[in-house]
Length: 136
View 1 (cartoon, rainbow, N blue to C red):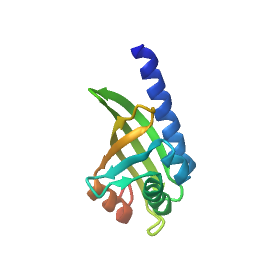
View 2 (cartoon, rainbow, N blue to C red; view 1 turned 90 degrees about the horizontal axis):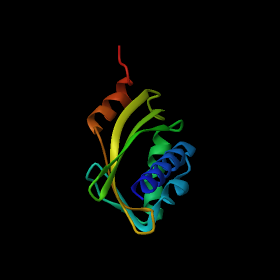
View 3 (tube, rainbow, N blue to C red; view 1 turned 120 degrees about the horizontal axis):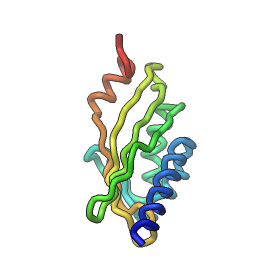
View 4 (cartoon, helix red, strand yellow; view 1 turned 180 degrees about the vertical axis):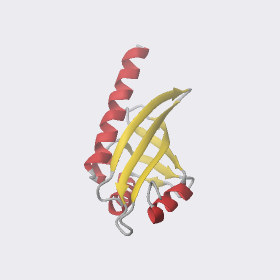
C-alpha cells in the first residue's frame, strides 16, 4: 500500500510540474483543493483556486518562458516536500534565472494539495533578475 501511495504522489508531482511548465495558471490551481492555500516565503497565503492561479500567473508574467523541474519528492511525517528548480528569462531585465526551492505540501483527503508552503532564496532571485544566473 505504501508503494502504491508513493507512486501516486510521485505521479501527482510529475503532473504538477507539467502544469507549471504549461504556463497556464488555472491548470496549476487545479492541483489544489477548492479551499487550498499557497504561501510563498512566509507571505500572505493565496487561498482558493482563483487566488492560487493569480499567484502562479505572477510567475508566468515575470518569466514568460518559465520551466520547472522536479528535483525530488520526500515524505516527512504527514507532509510531502516537493523540491524544484525553475529556469526562465525575466520579462523586465531579460536576465536568465535558475533557482531551486521547495514546497511543503499537506495533502487533503481528496488527494489534492490542502496547503503548500513554498520556499526559495528571494535575495538570490533578486540578484539573478538584475545580474543573471551566472554573472561574469
